[in-house]
Image (cartoon, rainbow, N blue to C red):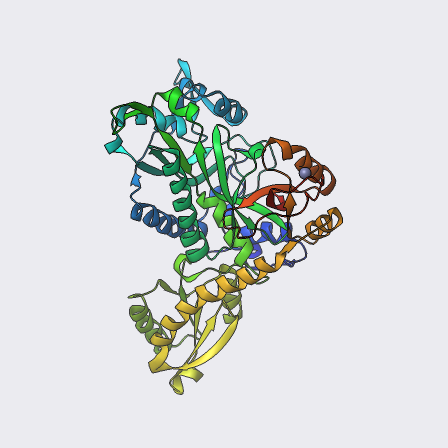
Length: 485
Ligand SMILES: [Zn+2]
């Protein structure tokens, strides 16, 4: 492996002080993406991020399949006429569509879109596949790359013109079943995003003015970035029945009547969630990964050129690879450089294999979650690695959750909202309405506090009481306010 010198240097800024610069540096120095590809807004995902995202995909897909979602691979191209069938959808997405107009030198009669999302591809087929209530719920998904002509500044992983995601598309007999699906999607988010990826989040119902184009109701999870802005992560939508009508997705119900389906879609964007994994778990030495999704779980660093150490390294590798991914670092760098390199890469466990330890039948382990070395008896080393592997995920999860909970504050005045937002937190308060009537209050928050009403939490236990924090009318909802990407 040849590395250029620049990528071997450590991070020169602190995450807490200059997050944006820290994020840019870590992408380059941990070799996650190369931004030099010569189409604007597109980037090359490098092995270290791809290895992690492959694992992320696998956990998310397993969770979906466990809930009876079936995998599909749909074409990347969608005819313009499909997109045009539902008016709010097309007006929401048209400015962001990449169009394919030619095949070779032949101009197509109809433009084809590079999918910006695939409702109109799936629904076109749903109308052919769904006939009876016995076909429902119909639960499909695909992993796919999608294309959006983003005009806002692009940021690697967070917002680029091509990204990698999973989209589920489901059809249900009733609105109640669609709502059940939203709750199942929320549970999936909890299990995978919160559990396996160790990312704390709140699942919101978005205010009526902030819905996905063509959605009847929109639900989305927000993850808090260290710079105090929330990032929208998996969202799920109950699609307006206008869609089912536009695509003529009907079924014969038990009562013999023909009815239109209710559709839902859920979109965990793996490459975007990866941005949150970098941001939430990384520190001033580099990346950190929950055990299950680490690109590499154990690295062995032999110290000194010694046949006995080499033999021991190979022996350990053989044993460890039965339960974890493992590599030996045979590069000709100095041990200190190797340590820094693997800490930047975020490998959860490093084995420093030196002659002095081996003579005493000991082995030094370094764990990235606690940034701590420990000396273990050689005979206990495998057992110890297995034990640490369980602790890594738990530690990262607890640390992230503690930080997240501390950032959510109840507020009673406009001044307090401003203060919490400036401190990089999330403000929680009483609010008049998340329907149209509340939009003007939300606009005031946007204009004066540079923040957004993110919505109402689906897990809210308290009821709103008192007055709206902005207009003073009786409050009907408890909302969360934050800065957002
Ligand atoms: Zn109000």
